[in-house]
Image (cartoon, rainbow, N blue to C red; front, side):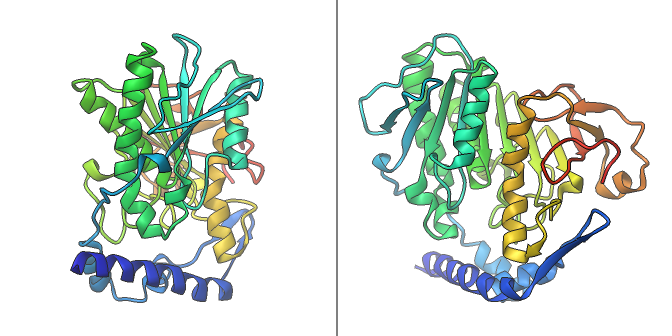
Length: 352
C-alpha cells in the first residue's frame, strides 16, 4: 500500500507541477548556444520536494506485473503499404522476408506505433532495402500517467521478447544477428528489456543491436539511478548505441551504451527548440528520432571520441578518433562521442 501511494504521489506531483512551472519559463539560444533551465530547479519544480524526499519516494518504484497481452500490438510496416497487425494474444502470423534484417521500432511515453515519426522511420528503412520493419504498439499503457508507463516497461519488454522468440526466432528461423531494436524515450528501456528477455531464452545469446534514442531519465536515472538490470544497458545486445539530445531533463545524461553520442553536447536544448520550456524539452527529446531517421541516408554524421563535455567544449578532443554515428555507425571504439547537427538535424562539421 505504501509503495502504491508513493507512486500515485509521484504521478500527481509530476503531472500537475510540471504544467504549473513550464508556462512561465522559456529557453533561448544566442550564437548557437542553448540556455537551458537550471537542472536542480527543473527537478525541484517537477516534484516540489527536497532531494531527500524525492529519493525516498523513488525507492518505492516497482515494475508492474499486470499487463494484458491484448494491449500490446505488433505492426508490420510493408513497402507496399499492405501493413499487418496482430497482438500478443493472437494466433495471427506476421509475414517476414526470410533470412533478412529485422528492425523493431519501439515508441515512448504518450506516443504510439502509428505516430508519424515511426512511419517515417519505417519508410526510411524500406528505402535502404530493409523490408522487415516491425513497430511495437503499447500506446494503451504508454498514454497513461508517466509513472504507470515507466512501471510497465519491463513487463512489456519481456512479453514482446517472448513473442519474438516464439514467432520470429523459432517459427521463422530468423537469426539474432538480424535483429535491430530502435527505441525512443521509455521505448528505449522497453527495447532493452526485449533484448534481455531474448538473451535469457537463448542461453545468453544476444540480439545484434539496440539503438536508444534519448533514453528516458525520470525514475530511471534520477532521482535514483536504477541498476543495469532495470533499464537499458550496454550489455543488452552485441552492440548498443545511444543518442543524447535532451540530457539531464527528459533524457539520460550519463553513458548508457557501448557508444554514447552526445548530439550538440547532448542538449539539453537542441537548435530550433527555443521557446516555452515544455515545448523546448519535448522538441529536444523528439529531436533524437528526427536525427536518427536522417542518418539512414547519410554517412556524413561524424562524432569525435571525448571523455566528457568539458573537454569537448575546450577543443581538447578535436584530434581524437572520429566515427560515423546513426544507422550507418562504424568503428569499434567504445565510449562517449560528440557530434554536431543544425536545427534540421543535418550534420555540421566543427561544432555549433
